[in-house]
Image 1 (tube, rainbow, N blue to C red):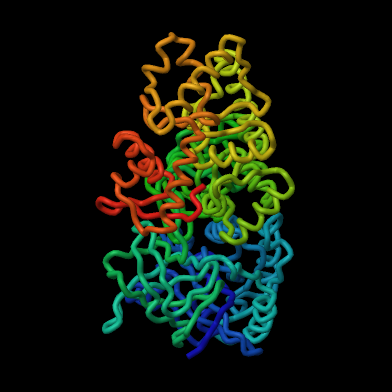
Image 2: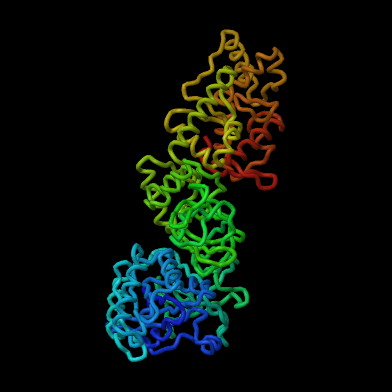
Length: 632
């Protein structure tokens, strides 16, 4: 069993009948046209997959994509996993329409390296070969292949094949390294059943690593499955890494429930009906893209319909680029920086493509300067700017949400956010993140709300905390608000006690008469001891008495219920008596507690139920036991 955790994929591209499949056979000894119709008609319909053993022992994947214009959809699906392009042009035919279309598609899909294989050289004289080379040089100008070498070969006679292999060996060695640290993600391009094994999917692993036994998810269905077996180039493997083509046998899912275009991944993904993109149209695109144009979107190995909403201008013209929102006719699972291709709805012509800037945006207004500035930040791809901008526009975002937006791993995102928090740009509250500007505004609003309350109700100790929370629940979740209140209290801005919030500097100032009432009430409560007068008796003097009684809580009195108040001195005395009782006994009944306090059953029950609420005692049938020692 082999183990391959990194790889590279070479892909052919070019006009029909320019010798791509014959060249692949000359390089590998294998024919990628395996479908009966492909063999009968002599053309490639679906991408053909094989491998190429290099002189230095390296094995690279090789994809032979179809060249016929009717199978461009299949060409795009195959090209989605390519690292290095081999553009094939016949010496006796030169650059053709599909040559250019394939070239544009490869560039749109983000390829950075490749070469040109000038085939059928033995069928052309030297002048034709030179003219073909000039034709190719002109076509490549301004593309990622502008400085690519042109290898002259003939697949039938074997001319130039060994030199081409050496060149490909150098290219694969320097191939772009894939992201191995990310969660595994594979765009499925084939699905079939193998007798005795069940469902098998194939594709090129875009990022991460899949091991035998790994738990995986299929999207868009969200079904869970497991990697039962792995094959790389027809050899069993225990794991496969980014950049490698592989066949993966899945358990826990039926073949009928999987289709080409699905995603096999090790991470939970969130779907979207909108994506913000940077869209570039080919210089010779058949049409511009204007608002509400219906387009065909090709991303990974999937095709779907969408509507265009250019954001930078009224329309995007051929040869130009701009931000655009694609409004999808189906759910899409994708990540930031994923590449895509677009074709017109009818007739089907490839006109451009680009990459995802925001995989989960809101529905936008067009020509919004602030929006365009934010999209420019996202496009630039600097982690600090991307995450800070996201938190700014999504207050209360979680690590998972920020990671999905930035196309980063959860641990990597958490570390980045912690660094940004240390720098004072974001604030973490209850496992959610807020921009400091947002938090400063909320703080100012909280202080303003409390100040207004104190001015309107100078004799009340503060605003009920729950009421204060409700004023801001539309902006922050309750747990985050409570965390913010704690921060503000630590900073000396506010104070909270017994469910009441107030400005730190605020104190209730009693008039001389109110102070007299206060002394009168406290004296009456102290005299009553464990059998205090009720609220109705205490407030017979009028509204002023009720107002002052409420001001006394909780520093001086304890409200056992709405009609019963106990002097705080007797509340703590009851705790001491109970604690001393439990030094000699394991449990106490209500009657025993009543006798201990020398009061009635009514007051004893109210006091001990308050102890239950504070977890000083716990009730077990008709008795109570001590929960925490030293209740005082």
